[in-house]
Length: 285
Image 1: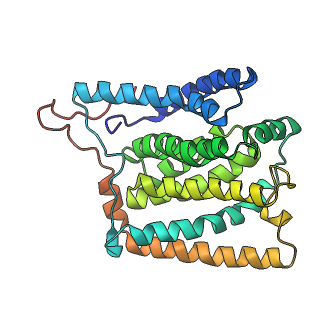
Image 2 (image 1 turned 135 degrees about the vertical axis):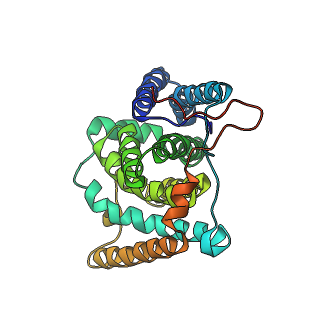
């Protein structure tokens, strides 16, 4: 899908196609088919298929491309320190975002839907949906396609914020959307700095898997429970302070390792591969 670089209008098309897929997935869900992974796969099929077909069309027409995943090692000299930092930082970043998500309680209807979708009696199905399919598909859509397309044409902060907003919108409710926006900002920044889609997939995997671990360890807690429901005061406040220090240190280390100039160059549109047309810029429409 390297040849599909969505413009503003094409990002809106992708969002519309995603919600069309959600309608199809809802039909599967309401029909009584008890599979979170199948429902989720049906949701993501249409937008990713559309992106694949558009990329093939653009490649045949000789438009330029930007690789989906082109990891930059920076001063680290290896991707392993980056993965270690983001994996450690992710749970603490989620903790810092929690107070904002608590401002938007989940409705009873939404809570019932999520309890059915993430039923702990079907751990394998839930794990496939939340920890495998969601990180792969959502990162491909929101960072690999939308953020990459916007980075190729706009200022980095615009691409990062807009892709995070779309990521939040796709979650369909304010509580999850608020958490998704905060996490999306971080993942968009990581993608911009490193051009590593697998780094953002790792962040997404850790975040979603941690939620499942929390549900397994505390089965009596509601689906929308937070760290505040598990950690008593004053230790919860201490936990937030420690989390802020860890996240700040992680951002400092990553920022120090990568130069913005190289990140911008990394997302410049490349000419079409040899043997194809001259490599025109991808169409805006």
